Image 1 (cartoon, one colour):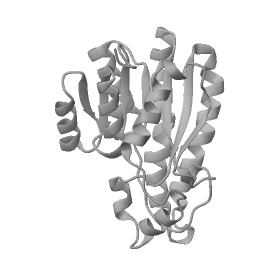
Image 2: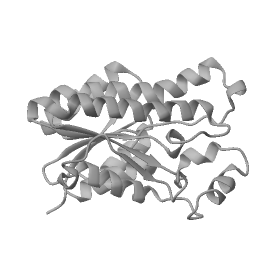
Image 3: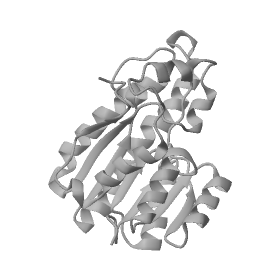
Image 4: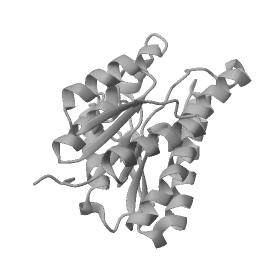
Length: 244
């Protein structure tokens, strides 16, 4: 028996990195998983590797129509939605004065608007079945100021506020909303950082290393499962001590 037997989960940005680790762990724990991403080839490959308990849907998380399609596909395939992990994100490592409005809008749409759209899209299905768990992936950048990550930091701070407001509003429906704040995790999102930036980030992490995607997935598993049945509106920093 797995921690997620009978559970149906949607995980965004799951073609690689943290999302992939979450999708694989959820499936291993008994869940049926719909993984989404704009990276169709990679997403299809991950879903096929996980097996028949997993479906891939190509999704632009910043599109309201895209969310309607994902919810429809999930309900059609598995009949319910128990868990949503809003994991998809992008980073543009730029200072305030170097961030054009177009870049800011792109980061906002992928990182912040998508979380709003995703939460809103699953509320009704979760209400109808008597509850659910929404897990929003922020960042250690959502707990403190950062240098040269202006738009990313702004959106990750916003996720914390949206999660707490949603947790208050949805508690009466037994829908829990919690936030994970990863530190520096060894995924492709760091590949676009300026030279030397990753080394600096590791040096400023008290545990002196990057985290692994599986370490974030374990926290998501806890929040997705009945083990966290009395947890909502909580902040989980998985950051090697960076936010202390």
